[in-house]
Image (cartoon, rainbow, N blue to C red; front, side, top):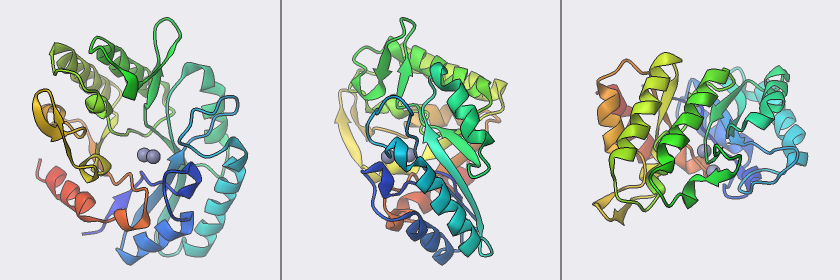
Length: 250
Ligand SMILES: [Zn+2]
Ligand SMILES: [Zn+2]
């Protein structure tokens, strides 16, 4: 089996370890045919945390270009960012895609814009009524065409809320959006790496959430496993390999 992964971090985001090249070397070791580096995007005006400094953006892109020169004969290497979608950065996203050093963006909606303009962090959601709004913000991002895939579409599984009809509504919105825009949803192995947690409804992973993936099974939506590794050793670990097997069986 030859693996591919487009969701990869490196130490620039300050919560991962390893240089860009360490991940490429690891991918070569495991016989990957494609590896995409997608460290957390920096924004020009605001530091939202848990990401590289904006002043490091060029160094990141140039480092990846040099790695492509050095290792490009062994596997396909792509350079990207994992990015939230906020409408005010439309020009910025486009400028990155216009940059010949950058190949793609994946959507990792860690925060989103509320109807009143306020930026809401997913981890701080304390009312399930916000979940459909979150899902709508992801679909809005799908519509723009800037992004190749939605990373951890069930990220809001981290919220310590009782699972109610708003979860179902949010999943419906995400699946309808993925169908409409022919958009790939990611089954995120990093959620599994974090292990199970106790919620009001019992023990479960924060994400991936089975409710979503059982629904996705009955659709034609394309699914891709993302390692979302923050350490080179995680790139092709048991969580990633088992996730690939599980999604192939669907
Ligand atoms: Zn991260
Ligand atoms: Zn990630």
